[in-house]
Amino acid sequence: MSLGMSAAWRSMQPKKKRCKRCGLFYTKALGKCNNCSHLNESQLAQLKKQHQKSLSANSALGKTMLLCAVIIGLLLLASFL
Ligand SMILES: [Zn+2]
Image 1 (spheres, rainbow, N blue to C red):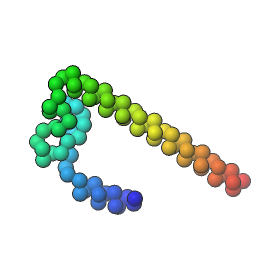
Image 2 (image 1 turned 180 degrees about the horizontal axis):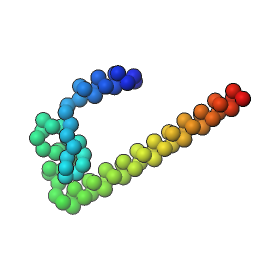
Image 3 (image 1 turned 180 degrees about the vertical axis):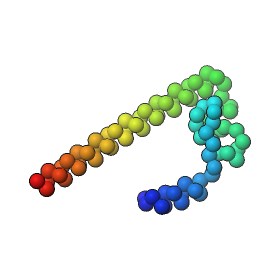
């Protein structure tokens, strides 16, 4: 996907607002967060913990992708030598 296309796609998405309570994004038109408004404090803590876990999983995946890119780059470089 090109950068221009992704920007156009993003502008078509509904306006999102970051929730102060849980830190997740919700649709501004809703007026309240649909992630945590129905949760009590302990459920909220659980949600936050889960979200944190998925964030760190994403960054681990990002590191793996970066490593692959570096290895491919080195292989390309080696093939030129
Ligand atoms: Zn929330």
